[in-house]
Length: 203
Image (tube, rainbow, N blue to C red):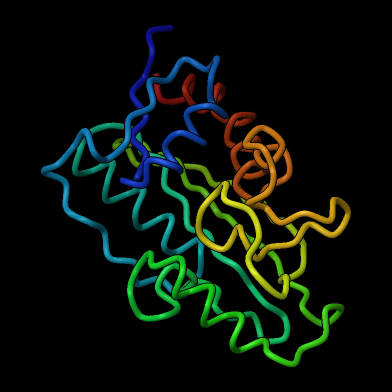
């Protein structure tokens, strides 16, 4: 089977690298949105991770004429009623300002004891083909919010997401270990498991 192009609905090089590594060995050629500069940003107007992922995958597939994979993910903190949730990337007001987002989250959790700082990363992925066929996958990673940032690997909230069984934050884990445990890794494993039969469907 010749390789099918799979466009990732992201210009984040860290995310492109992670997804490319996870889908190695499948008959797809993974491209980031950087290779399609004419495609505009998709506005995330959904109220759930699924709505945002579906909207992005559909719009990117239609704009590029290629199969697209989009994800929406974020962190849900129980002590904050599930916030920041779908607003994770723009929690402090500016999209993608990791440092400010982390500062805001830690400030809101001031005085909350370690055992009550439970949280989870959630990721929903949608693969959408221009023919209108699609499928979705989901991954969840349970953990705690640390008292201060630690580690310099990863991105987003990784420096304050503590993996209790390892005593490390997500930003202290090597990429291959993080990929096995993470919400995105779990969603990707599900994508990988479903992709081959999906490729046959769209032949």
